[in-house]
Image (cartoon, rainbow, N blue to C red; front, side, top):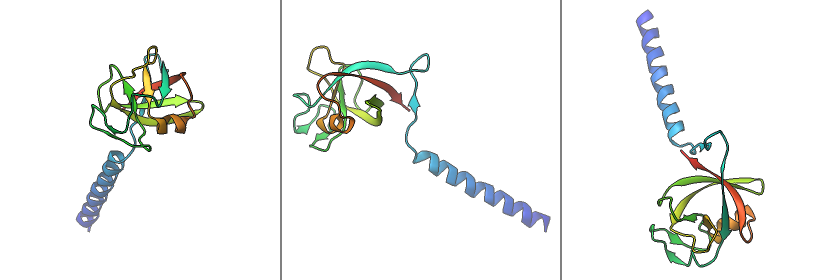
Length: 129
């Protein structure tokens, strides 16, 4: 009887462990604070010539619904959290740019609209991991 109880306990732990691993694998990345616990900041604009309809140099198809950013140094596919105007979104680098002097980031029009970012504004950002 004790052996059956022990076996049932081992099976229950294995099932719980498998479920927890699946849950963690399906969760969103966490926001990684900048050194000192804060955020990085940079100037960003929305729309413009950086994201024309078609494929980016990173291979992403740009449509009116595409939400992503261009950055001149960060490589394709880097995931970021961007915060502006009280909103925080998870996005990723989908192309090089921006092609406007003074901007660190260029947001697709759809992402700019989601954040209500107009013109060139200072945003806060963190890596996602």
